[in-house]
Amino acid sequence: MRIPGFITPNSLTVTRIALTPFGVYTLFLDGGDNPRFQILAWCIFFVLGMTDIVDGKWARNSNRITPLGAFLDPVADKVLIGSAMISLSILNRFPWWITIVILTREIGITIFRLLVIRGGVIPASKGGKAKTLMQNFGVGFFMLPFPSWLEWFRISFISVAIILTVTTAYDYVRSWMRAR
Image (cartoon, rainbow, N blue to C red; front, side):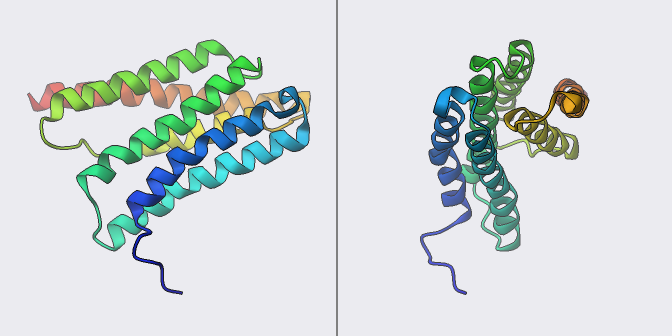
């Protein structure tokens, strides 16, 4: 199957940003308490999260990495995870303090990267990619209608995500300081 020329890795990234509100809308349907809508919202966020993997591999394999894509891809990740966390926190299904910790790190490191790079993009580290994956799974599990006896499962994933969130922020700053 041939992909139309107007569909590019960057167009997938923009689509991820543009479709995020549909996931948010679905989270709030029926007051956020309907298990069918919770599962549907998870499916939407899952598919949008998978486009992150697809667009990145596609860009690398087809030699279509662009400065715009390198900038927009992490922005799309933050829009996706941030909108999910804020929505779940508003619905009292996700702790606000975790939303604040993760968003503070994401916004802070994004600003840091923009200030220190001057003409380039700091690529995501393996730790940063693992952090994004664990955040997506951790937050995703809060979307699903889990029984209370599986709460340990959610807490385990989000705990690892928080640890990676903080340690990768430290690593970015430490690496920059060493390079100076």
